[in-house]
Image (tube, rainbow, N blue to C red; front, side, top):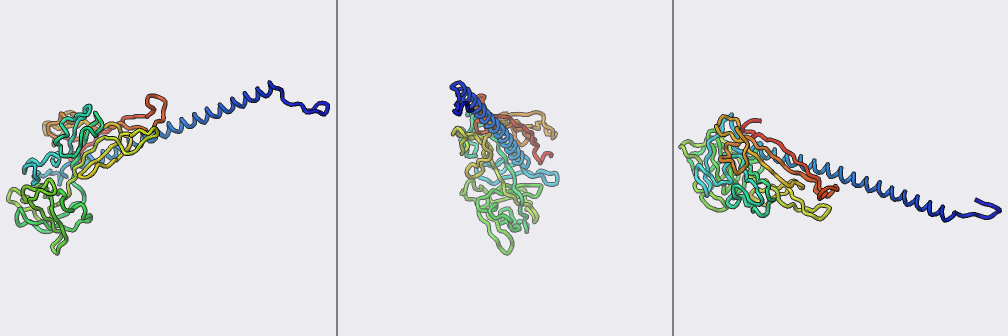
Length: 340
């Protein structure tokens, strides 16, 4: 504004007022930006939590449903084993395929029953305290059919060629079944011949566990052509510290799976696994009650399992507590061989 040809500037009060208004606007913008960021982190954390929980339950459901000896035309074959460390009717604990599921109830770093002699290669101190361990025993698909009958109980097996030879590699545990009987054994060698895919076994103890006999049937009746040969898979599923870190450089817990080799991290941000097994105690096909793993007398009576996981956002995204979001996801899975 000009008066008498001279420029008039702002007064000190006007400058202070302008500065105050500018500061208020800047502070409001900063608070709005911070609120937007907090809302974004919260929504991202909620989405990640949901994803972790769904993935964990989906994997566990897929692992549990096919557990155990596959039903064949409504029949479950009688089960025998040739593996060292057990008998013909009682295989070593990890390989009791007649009991498709197994479990260990975690209580403050201790497990019931004890993991010490489980044969699973797990150390209680390395697992999440108070979280359970699930064991699944399944037969892998596809299987191989015998192309010729066994002339004697210790005879070499000849099957159709495998689509995945690695599944039927030396040391693999296999189950031979004709719907009436099933025998678990360890193969020692394999190769393609003019008669078919040749599978051999010995009484050697290496690789572990080895066979105490090479005889695959115990009733004098040979397995005929068409009998099915499938690879056995025994896996443990548990909670342990994961390999990654969150936005506070903490190491989150994760869901793991372990077979015969190293443990494999499956889903990050799973802090707890709780199991309850539905047992059929009177053999009528209907479960009478749910029990924790330590209370199950015979896992062959398990018909379903209630699975509960505690999923997290992994990162700190909130203001309450430690800032990590948590939610429990629960489902009940029926073993496929006992219903759908």
